[in-house]
Length: 306
Ligand code: TXA
Ligand code: MG
Image: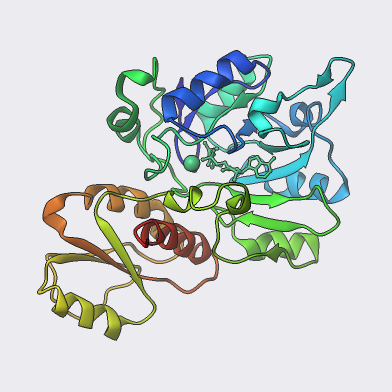
């Protein structure tokens, strides 16, 4: 079943059932070494499945429900780990999150188990931010789509790994890094713009978030404009704020701050048409939601390099 969250639509199955979870991997064509996030209706329920230390407690209390996933140690009972290996890709940690979306919370509240859910798109493609995107991508591979309207955040949750001594940023996302660092009173360790489990899957996860049309990213307007001229205008341009007249088929202004994230995936999807030529994107500064938008644009572009 697909359901809305405030970040992107998820494809859910009961997280305590390997048989149910296996169907997610099938429907998405997703490799099983890529772990899934377990979704809960509250901190109190999450606490029964993953071990929270003080830092985790603090972040959960401050930011849940919301676009933050915490990677924490799994809890074991007499039968072994409560969250099965298929969800965690065999790791002894689990990603846990409480989404801030009324329909998602109602769903999670109604069932007596956590819901494992990746984004509801075929593996490697741009994540869905409307129910229509889910239908276009998964079609009859999904039995039911709960429609909660367009997602209000528009990029996936920020993932913070608290299973080790230093808090690590695994994926920039809908909750700005600065907000987390302020609450922790500590900087997050971050490897930069690389997929988090790259070492376990060389080359594979780079192809995340990529439309079929080629994406090129630029730090400077002048470079982008030179490229657009080179392509003789056979391109579409994406930027957060308006840029001076560029020779292109279409110039999309995403907007600043939250608006930029909300519009990103729908824009990439709309422009994913052979008639677009190429997508030239101006990278936003790496602060606030700009960090997540940069990350997604890099991944969309990197997938086309070698
Ligand atoms: O906003 C979101 O997080 C959305 C909505 C549906 O909640 N979900 C989402 O899931 O983006 P997905 O499967 O597309 O991305 C989950 C990522 C994995 O690719 C992996 O990088 C990381 O979360 N992850 C999950 N569990 C982990 C773990 N135990 N250790 C390290 N990384 C983990
Ligand atoms: Mg995904």
